[in-house]
Image (cartoon, rainbow, N blue to C red; front, side, top):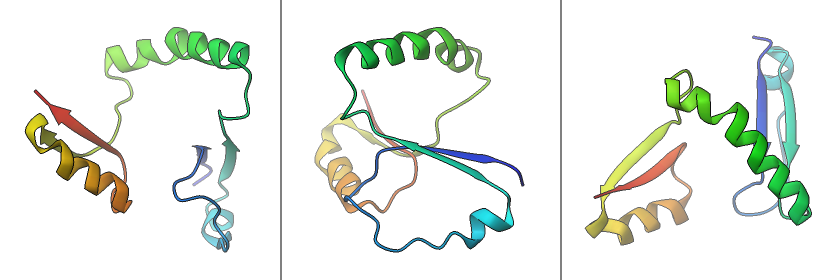
Amino acid sequence: MDGRIVQIGTQNGVVKELNLMPLLLKRLTHTGSTLRARSVQDKAQIAADLRQKVWPLLERGAVKPHIFQTFPLEQAADAHRLMESSAHIGKIMLTL
């Protein structure tokens, strides 16, 4: 309840229909953006802010990315097929 969703970009282009009722019932705030239209200077500032504000949280383990599945490097083609299928939520990782 009263959470927020921050979305940067989409997979597979435009969504034609969106049911907003689940967001409304949970009183969520949804913020969206894309990096593609940003200038190089804007992207550099975003990267600097990320390094200063988010990396320390990752390093401390205060926030963690959601890992959907890991694959050995030798199975990179399988990982790529999964990524293209959009059947995942979270990160797909290759391990060495």
